Length: 327
Image (tube, one colour):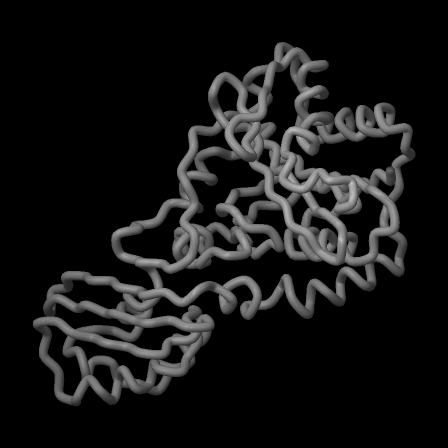
Protein backbone atom coordinates (compact mmCIF):
# COMPACT_ATOMS: atom_id res chain seq x y z
CA UNK A 1 0.00 0.00 0.00
CA UNK A 2 1.14 3.53 -0.75
CA UNK A 3 0.93 6.20 1.96
CA UNK A 4 0.58 9.71 0.60
CA UNK A 5 1.17 12.59 2.96
CA UNK A 6 -0.68 15.56 1.49
CA UNK A 7 0.26 18.80 3.24
CA UNK A 8 -1.98 21.02 1.11
CA UNK A 9 -4.89 22.56 3.05
CA UNK A 10 -6.91 23.86 0.07
CA UNK A 11 -10.23 21.94 0.26
CA UNK A 12 -10.94 22.17 -3.48
CA UNK A 13 -7.48 20.82 -4.31
CA UNK A 14 -7.76 18.02 -1.75
CA UNK A 15 -11.14 16.80 -2.99
CA UNK A 16 -9.81 16.94 -6.54
CA UNK A 17 -6.82 14.91 -5.32
CA UNK A 18 -9.21 12.18 -4.14
CA UNK A 19 -10.82 11.92 -7.56
CA UNK A 20 -7.43 12.00 -9.27
CA UNK A 21 -6.15 9.14 -7.11
CA UNK A 22 -9.34 7.14 -7.55
CA UNK A 23 -9.11 7.36 -11.34
CA UNK A 24 -5.35 6.72 -11.57
CA UNK A 25 -4.76 4.21 -8.76
CA UNK A 26 -2.79 1.08 -9.65
CA UNK A 27 -2.42 -0.27 -6.13
CA UNK A 28 -4.08 0.28 -2.72
CA UNK A 29 -3.22 3.58 -1.11
CA UNK A 30 -3.92 5.85 1.82
CA UNK A 31 -3.82 9.65 1.74
CA UNK A 32 -3.77 11.77 4.90
CA UNK A 33 -4.71 15.42 4.62
CA UNK A 34 -6.20 18.45 6.37
CA UNK A 35 -8.32 21.37 5.18
CA UNK A 36 -8.55 25.00 6.11
CA UNK A 37 -12.05 25.98 7.29
CA UNK A 38 -14.63 24.54 4.90
CA UNK A 39 -18.01 22.91 4.68
CA UNK A 40 -17.80 19.72 2.63
CA UNK A 41 -21.19 18.91 1.11
CA UNK A 42 -22.35 15.43 0.14
CA UNK A 43 -22.72 14.64 -3.56
CA UNK A 44 -26.52 14.40 -3.40
CA UNK A 45 -27.20 17.40 -1.19
CA UNK A 46 -28.67 20.83 -1.79
CA UNK A 47 -25.78 23.08 -0.80
CA UNK A 48 -27.87 26.06 0.34
CA UNK A 49 -29.99 23.68 2.39
CA UNK A 50 -26.97 22.55 4.40
CA UNK A 51 -25.13 25.78 5.22
CA UNK A 52 -25.77 29.10 6.88
CA UNK A 53 -24.72 31.12 3.84
CA UNK A 54 -24.37 34.37 5.77
CA UNK A 55 -22.18 32.69 8.38
CA UNK A 56 -19.82 30.97 5.94
CA UNK A 57 -19.46 34.04 3.68
CA UNK A 58 -18.76 36.44 6.53
CA UNK A 59 -16.08 34.12 7.95
CA UNK A 60 -14.43 33.09 4.71
CA UNK A 61 -15.40 29.43 5.11
CA UNK A 62 -15.05 27.54 1.84
CA UNK A 63 -17.87 25.36 0.52
CA UNK A 64 -16.95 22.36 -1.66
CA UNK A 65 -18.91 19.34 -2.86
CA UNK A 66 -17.33 15.88 -2.58
CA UNK A 67 -17.69 12.71 -4.66
CA UNK A 68 -19.45 10.66 -1.97
CA UNK A 69 -22.95 10.81 -0.54
CA UNK A 70 -24.00 11.43 3.04
CA UNK A 71 -24.31 14.65 4.99
CA UNK A 72 -22.41 17.92 5.10
CA UNK A 73 -19.41 18.11 7.45
CA UNK A 74 -17.24 20.92 8.76
CA UNK A 75 -13.47 20.82 8.23
CA UNK A 76 -10.69 22.89 9.73
CA UNK A 77 -7.06 22.33 10.68
CA UNK A 78 -8.25 20.56 13.83
CA UNK A 79 -9.54 17.73 11.64
CA UNK A 80 -7.47 14.94 10.13
CA UNK A 81 -8.89 13.35 7.00
CA UNK A 82 -7.94 9.98 5.59
CA UNK A 83 -8.69 8.54 2.15
CA UNK A 84 -8.34 4.82 1.44
CA UNK A 85 -8.48 3.45 -2.10
CA UNK A 86 -8.43 -0.24 -3.00
CA UNK A 87 -9.79 -2.57 -5.73
CA UNK A 88 -13.48 -3.37 -5.47
CA UNK A 89 -12.53 -7.00 -6.08
CA UNK A 90 -11.39 -7.19 -2.46
CA UNK A 91 -15.07 -7.32 -1.50
CA UNK A 92 -14.91 -4.57 1.12
CA UNK A 93 -17.42 -2.09 -0.32
CA UNK A 94 -19.82 -0.97 2.43
CA UNK A 95 -17.64 -2.75 5.02
CA UNK A 96 -17.03 0.25 7.24
CA UNK A 97 -15.49 -1.91 9.96
CA UNK A 98 -12.71 -2.85 7.54
CA UNK A 99 -11.92 0.72 6.58
CA UNK A 100 -12.13 2.24 10.08
CA UNK A 101 -10.05 -0.46 11.79
CA UNK A 102 -6.77 1.47 11.45
CA UNK A 103 -8.23 4.56 13.11
CA UNK A 104 -9.90 2.63 15.93
CA UNK A 105 -6.74 0.58 16.59
CA UNK A 106 -4.59 3.72 16.52
CA UNK A 107 -6.86 5.48 19.00
CA UNK A 108 -6.69 2.44 21.27
CA UNK A 109 -2.90 2.73 21.19
CA UNK A 110 -3.34 6.32 22.40
CA UNK A 111 -5.53 5.18 25.28
CA UNK A 112 -8.79 6.24 23.64
CA UNK A 113 -11.56 3.67 23.27
CA UNK A 114 -13.57 4.21 20.09
CA UNK A 115 -16.07 2.02 18.27
CA UNK A 116 -17.91 1.86 14.98
CA UNK A 117 -21.59 2.59 15.50
CA UNK A 118 -24.46 2.29 13.06
CA UNK A 119 -23.39 2.27 9.46
CA UNK A 120 -20.53 4.74 9.22
CA UNK A 121 -19.77 6.69 12.41
CA UNK A 122 -16.92 6.20 14.87
CA UNK A 123 -17.94 7.14 18.41
CA UNK A 124 -16.19 7.85 21.68
CA UNK A 125 -18.45 7.54 24.69
CA UNK A 126 -21.51 7.70 22.50
CA UNK A 127 -20.40 10.87 20.71
CA UNK A 128 -19.31 11.06 17.09
CA UNK A 129 -15.63 11.71 16.42
CA UNK A 130 -15.44 10.53 12.81
CA UNK A 131 -17.89 10.25 9.92
CA UNK A 132 -17.17 8.08 6.89
CA UNK A 133 -18.41 7.69 3.32
CA UNK A 134 -17.61 5.64 0.21
CA UNK A 135 -18.00 5.52 -3.53
CA UNK A 136 -16.95 3.19 -6.36
CA UNK A 137 -15.53 4.13 -9.74
CA UNK A 138 -14.03 1.94 -12.46
CA UNK A 139 -13.67 -1.04 -10.14
CA UNK A 140 -11.99 0.88 -7.31
CA UNK A 141 -13.43 1.80 -3.90
CA UNK A 142 -12.73 5.15 -2.30
CA UNK A 143 -13.42 5.39 1.42
CA UNK A 144 -12.78 8.57 3.36
CA UNK A 145 -13.24 9.71 6.94
CA UNK A 146 -13.19 13.08 8.72
CA UNK A 147 -11.61 12.78 12.17
CA UNK A 148 -12.48 15.43 14.73
CA UNK A 149 -9.31 15.90 16.76
CA UNK A 150 -9.40 19.53 17.89
CA UNK A 151 -12.00 21.11 15.60
CA UNK A 152 -13.71 24.44 16.25
CA UNK A 153 -17.09 23.07 17.31
CA UNK A 154 -18.57 26.57 17.54
CA UNK A 155 -17.79 27.19 13.88
CA UNK A 156 -19.07 23.71 13.04
CA UNK A 157 -22.42 24.51 14.62
CA UNK A 158 -22.62 27.96 13.04
CA UNK A 159 -21.66 26.91 9.53
CA UNK A 160 -24.15 24.04 9.36
CA UNK A 161 -27.00 25.84 11.08
CA UNK A 162 -29.98 26.68 8.87
CA UNK A 163 -33.68 27.49 9.25
CA UNK A 164 -34.92 24.33 7.59
CA UNK A 165 -38.59 25.28 7.75
CA UNK A 166 -37.81 28.02 5.23
CA UNK A 167 -36.09 25.83 2.69
CA UNK A 168 -37.84 22.69 1.47
CA UNK A 169 -35.06 20.78 -0.24
CA UNK A 170 -35.40 17.73 -2.39
CA UNK A 171 -31.84 16.75 -1.51
CA UNK A 172 -30.70 14.63 1.41
CA UNK A 173 -30.59 16.64 4.66
CA UNK A 174 -27.72 16.31 7.08
CA UNK A 175 -28.59 14.77 10.43
CA UNK A 176 -27.44 16.70 13.48
CA UNK A 177 -25.22 14.55 15.68
CA UNK A 178 -23.61 14.99 19.04
CA UNK A 179 -19.90 15.29 18.35
CA UNK A 180 -16.69 15.27 20.36
CA UNK A 181 -13.05 16.11 19.79
CA UNK A 182 -10.56 13.27 20.32
CA UNK A 183 -8.16 15.58 22.16
CA UNK A 184 -10.69 15.83 25.00
CA UNK A 185 -10.27 12.11 25.66
CA UNK A 186 -6.46 11.94 25.64
CA UNK A 187 -4.42 12.07 28.80
CA UNK A 188 -1.41 13.88 27.33
CA UNK A 189 -1.10 17.01 25.22
CA UNK A 190 -0.98 16.49 21.47
CA UNK A 191 -1.56 18.94 18.63
CA UNK A 192 -3.54 18.13 15.51
CA UNK A 193 -0.29 18.23 13.51
CA UNK A 194 1.34 15.77 15.92
CA UNK A 195 -1.72 13.49 15.71
CA UNK A 196 -1.43 13.64 11.91
CA UNK A 197 2.23 12.61 12.08
CA UNK A 198 1.62 9.84 14.59
CA UNK A 199 -1.28 8.42 12.59
CA UNK A 200 0.85 8.44 9.43
CA UNK A 201 3.67 6.61 11.23
CA UNK A 202 1.21 4.06 12.62
CA UNK A 203 -0.23 3.27 9.19
CA UNK A 204 3.23 3.07 7.62
CA UNK A 205 4.44 0.63 10.24
CA UNK A 206 1.28 -1.49 10.30
CA UNK A 207 1.11 -1.89 6.52
CA UNK A 208 4.82 -1.79 5.80
CA UNK A 209 4.66 1.19 3.47
CA UNK A 210 6.85 4.24 3.09
CA UNK A 211 5.48 7.79 3.00
CA UNK A 212 5.43 9.58 -0.33
CA UNK A 213 4.20 12.90 -1.69
CA UNK A 214 2.65 14.11 -4.93
CA UNK A 215 5.01 14.62 -7.83
CA UNK A 216 4.99 17.92 -9.75
CA UNK A 217 3.12 16.09 -12.52
CA UNK A 218 0.51 14.85 -10.02
CA UNK A 219 0.02 18.36 -8.68
CA UNK A 220 -0.39 19.81 -12.15
CA UNK A 221 -3.11 17.27 -13.01
CA UNK A 222 -4.89 17.86 -9.70
CA UNK A 223 -4.81 21.63 -10.17
CA UNK A 224 -6.37 21.22 -13.59
CA UNK A 225 -9.17 19.11 -12.10
CA UNK A 226 -9.58 21.64 -9.29
CA UNK A 227 -10.02 24.52 -11.73
CA UNK A 228 -12.32 22.51 -14.00
CA UNK A 229 -14.57 21.12 -11.26
CA UNK A 230 -13.98 21.47 -7.52
CA UNK A 231 -13.39 25.23 -7.49
CA UNK A 232 -16.46 25.98 -9.63
CA UNK A 233 -19.91 27.22 -8.70
CA UNK A 234 -21.37 24.70 -11.13
CA UNK A 235 -20.10 21.73 -9.10
CA UNK A 236 -20.39 23.14 -5.59
CA UNK A 237 -23.81 24.77 -5.96
CA UNK A 238 -25.22 24.21 -9.44
CA UNK A 239 -25.41 20.42 -9.19
CA UNK A 240 -27.72 20.62 -6.16
CA UNK A 241 -31.02 18.79 -6.53
CA UNK A 242 -34.00 20.96 -7.48
CA UNK A 243 -35.36 22.86 -4.51
CA UNK A 244 -37.84 25.49 -3.40
CA UNK A 245 -36.54 28.55 -1.58
CA UNK A 246 -38.85 30.67 0.57
CA UNK A 247 -38.14 33.65 2.78
CA UNK A 248 -40.28 36.25 4.54
CA UNK A 249 -39.34 39.42 6.40
CA UNK A 250 -41.27 42.24 8.02
CA UNK A 251 -39.83 45.65 7.16
CA UNK A 252 -40.98 49.12 8.18
CA UNK A 253 -42.54 49.52 4.73
CA UNK A 254 -44.40 46.20 4.89
CA UNK A 255 -44.12 42.41 4.74
CA UNK A 256 -42.18 40.91 1.81
CA UNK A 257 -42.34 37.23 0.88
CA UNK A 258 -40.19 35.62 -1.83
CA UNK A 259 -40.58 32.15 -3.28
CA UNK A 260 -38.16 30.69 -5.80
CA UNK A 261 -38.02 27.39 -7.66
CA UNK A 262 -34.39 26.44 -8.35
CA UNK A 263 -33.33 23.83 -10.89
CA UNK A 264 -29.72 23.21 -11.86
CA UNK A 265 -28.77 26.05 -9.51
CA UNK A 266 -30.77 28.52 -11.62
CA UNK A 267 -33.93 30.43 -10.67
CA UNK A 268 -36.63 28.99 -12.94
CA UNK A 269 -39.61 30.66 -11.28
CA UNK A 270 -39.72 33.70 -8.97
CA UNK A 271 -42.66 35.04 -6.97
CA UNK A 272 -42.68 38.12 -4.73
CA UNK A 273 -45.68 39.11 -2.64
CA UNK A 274 -46.61 41.06 0.48
CA UNK A 275 -48.53 44.04 1.83
CA UNK A 276 -46.08 46.66 0.56
CA UNK A 277 -46.74 49.34 -2.06
CA UNK A 278 -45.03 49.87 -5.40
CA UNK A 279 -45.28 51.91 -8.60
CA UNK A 280 -44.46 49.18 -11.13
CA UNK A 281 -45.81 45.69 -11.81
CA UNK A 282 -43.87 43.02 -9.90
CA UNK A 283 -43.82 40.82 -13.00
CA UNK A 284 -40.98 42.97 -14.37
CA UNK A 285 -38.95 42.41 -11.22
CA UNK A 286 -39.47 38.65 -11.08
CA UNK A 287 -38.67 38.38 -14.80
CA UNK A 288 -35.26 39.94 -14.06
CA UNK A 289 -34.55 37.11 -11.61
CA UNK A 290 -35.65 34.15 -13.71
CA UNK A 291 -32.87 32.39 -15.59
CA UNK A 292 -30.28 33.71 -13.10
CA UNK A 293 -28.01 31.59 -10.93
CA UNK A 294 -29.06 31.45 -7.29
CA UNK A 295 -25.79 32.96 -6.14
CA UNK A 296 -24.76 36.24 -4.57
CA UNK A 297 -22.80 37.39 -7.60
CA UNK A 298 -25.50 36.52 -10.13
CA UNK A 299 -28.35 38.05 -8.11
CA UNK A 300 -26.26 41.17 -7.59
CA UNK A 301 -25.66 41.47 -11.33
CA UNK A 302 -29.33 40.83 -12.18
CA UNK A 303 -30.48 43.63 -9.88
CA UNK A 304 -27.66 46.06 -10.65
CA UNK A 305 -29.77 48.21 -12.97
CA UNK A 306 -33.12 47.58 -11.28
CA UNK A 307 -34.84 50.34 -9.31
CA UNK A 308 -36.07 48.08 -6.53
CA UNK A 309 -37.88 50.94 -4.79
CA UNK A 310 -40.11 51.31 -7.87
CA UNK A 311 -41.46 47.79 -7.27
CA UNK A 312 -41.29 47.62 -3.46
CA UNK A 313 -41.53 51.14 -2.06
CA UNK A 314 -38.94 51.70 0.66
CA UNK A 315 -36.93 48.55 -0.12
CA UNK A 316 -33.26 48.84 -1.01
CA UNK A 317 -31.47 46.60 -3.48
CA UNK A 318 -29.33 45.19 -0.66
CA UNK A 319 -32.38 44.30 1.43
CA UNK A 320 -33.97 42.42 -1.46
CA UNK A 321 -30.71 40.63 -2.26
CA UNK A 322 -30.44 39.31 1.28
CA UNK A 323 -34.05 38.21 1.20
CA UNK A 324 -33.40 36.26 -2.01
CA UNK A 325 -30.31 34.49 -0.66
CA UNK A 326 -30.19 34.21 3.12
CA UNK A 327 -33.08 32.12 4.42
